[in-house]
Length: 376
Image 1 (tube, rainbow, N blue to C red):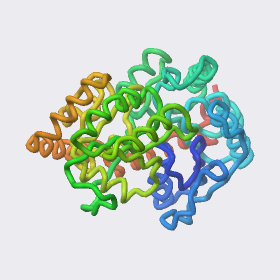
Image 2 (tube, one colour):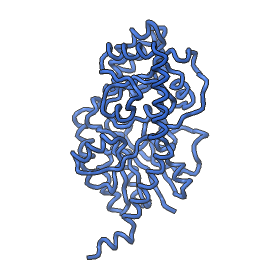
Image 3 (cartoon, one colour):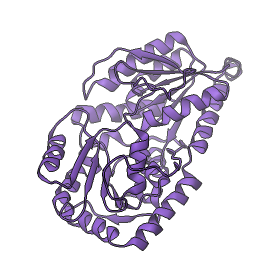
Image 4 (cartoon, rainbow, N blue to C red):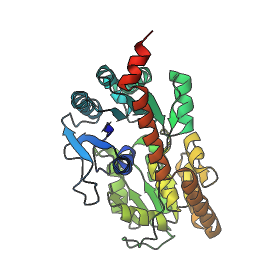
């Protein structure tokens, strides 16, 4: 039985972000394929979820739960534990963990790293954090047996900047059955945004557009920063001063979230730095008519299944209002999005690609192959 460890997420099951979403789908899949799977995580960051697969092993380690040091410290303690455990192959999420890859390689553990987006370009990080991510990326390029990129545009950046060619494995989404709205909203009439509150997700510009949007339509905001701050305060103020604005915070109820996507009149996606965004792919699978910030990553994923706008309040407002007032366009974009999600971004294809990458890395660096490669 192949023993796999997953490092670099908040654990299993967790609903924090894209990595956690992927692990919730991938870990049980790998167990079904005959692997023994252990997911490392952080204390108090997982849920007691009846949908969790009891066959997935979990290990919680210690670290510093701060914005700038959590990834590094939890990554170190997880890596040390995994180095002692010595699994057959490790799946590592996030290039900040590139600092610890030599420990895994020293123990003879093949390593596959999901490099995520260009973290060092995110506005939320200070100079030191950006240095950590960029240096971690260089170390990942040096020490990883294989890298995974979730967008082809990210793959091109890694090829040019670090000389590494990665395996393209995006995020997935599955079309759920029609779900009833758990919120008192009129289907097809409201604006929806689902995002972490960071500047590069165009949250501030969207908030600038909210007062105008709320004059004629309900506006539903799902997300938070996770640490409090200015954008959380703005969301709270908007919900308090505008009767048609609802801030629902971070949401771990998939059915409620999927129902909001299925019934939205228009969904705004403002992510600008990462590659394939998991929330966007799931929105597409739900058939959500989308207005997206015009970036190379969003165009790669959505193609012709969206209206593209520039990151300013006027353009966002106009794009959303125009889409809300055009039933034919909303239907067309929703159908295109759902078809594209099914053909190019299914969880079945994503999980299969990860399985193949992990098996390949284990085979390439198995004890027998290492002995062969060391012989003259």
